Length: 193
Image 1 (cartoon, rainbow, N blue to C red):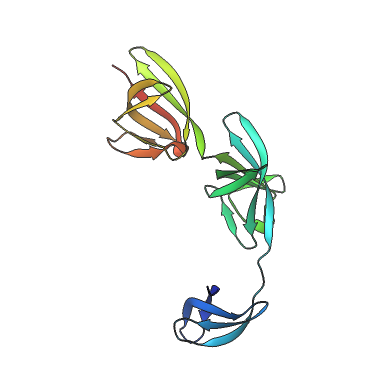
Image 2 (image 1 turned 90 degrees about the vertical axis):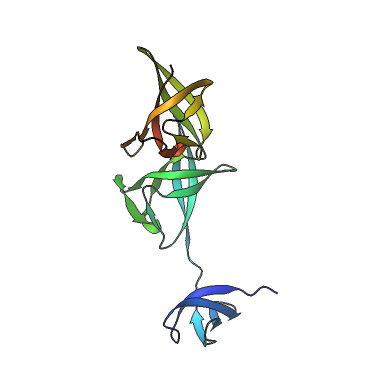
């Protein structure tokens, strides 16, 4: 039989340890797995907030939800799972809204809307220089696909060597063998001889 466990501060050990639940909540009896200390604690289930979420992908946006527990702090850049209809998607938080103002960080109970972008699959944008001509390329790829500076890649069937990668954060990586995942990339620049 599996025993339910919880992490609590043990007054005897003086630190957070695993406790075995001997009697179920709300008035639980628990025992420290380190020193054996037994105590009564009142455990309440954390409240779960279902937060309206806008999931953007390319030029499309869909409304969905993300569940966060009371006390969870959500920040721009966090990776979460959004539900849109019957589907689940990995998303990155781009902005947090409360009182018609954008915030960079808020506790779950204060969030009105999360603005996110899909990172399971992303549209990679590339600019391929061929002599005096620049060819724009677009392709849908998994968000965790890795691109490496000075390596040969293919976007939309066109092979080229990556010369630099512009990241969504604004910086550009150009050092040989430096990498970035597709969901981090704003544009790839490359050359074809």
